[in-house]
Length: 347
Image (cartoon, rainbow, N blue to C red; front, side, top):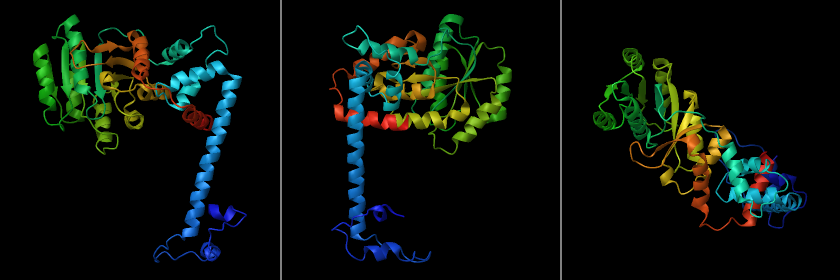
């Protein structure tokens, strides 16, 4: 039964024929759809507005009650929301705050909670070894990240024990870009076309200490992505997968990236393009929500200077998130109250 049928009192805006239109027989499959009468459309709109008003009022009451009962946690929640952290993530973090503190400004407490919960790869060396594949969407910075990793390795161990493999045969100039980096480093590049080619190439490179695999950038909705990830899993079974996660993307895009590349089972991610992000609340929310560990942070195009080990930059990353939002005015209380209400409803 549609929503208007549940209204006990008739609306004066509803014309008499409404009841016959609602209770009449359903149109046959082959008939043309009948436009909804104006009266029903008005009732639907009024009900929608009434529901939004009630939700807003309830959220305001809930938020006010939270501020009265737990003022410190409410202020921590405000501080976390001010850096654009998602309501559900901010609420979960604020729930871990103590009920009292001697601090007049709870901002350091919010920063500490965020830093403590931020998932990073602990005890990772400045240079990694083994077989590492970098996956991610187009423009996420995969090839530049591989160049930075390769340069770090070369500076410490030399390029003789380094090899670069590229699976990117789609993007124009992708292989040439990797070859340019390889020539500078004095490393070899090995293009592969399919799963068997990848497997044979890795067998030949068993004596190399580090093999980096560059993959084709594809959107999560691209139908070819599943095939590429399948080839990677079968052709490079011993590879550790890193997901390139662009920090400047909006939260919905980041969510789709994490979910779309989940079949690759990334061991961790590389948070790229941090220098291009206007806010870090979105990427931090996604990382916390999915417990996606960060291995490296990239904040520029310089090779390899702008690649940083994540656990060494955890405090910097959280401070950067707050600094980006410092000039911006605080979120109005009514907006925060609605966000708080939505988070409570879905908690």
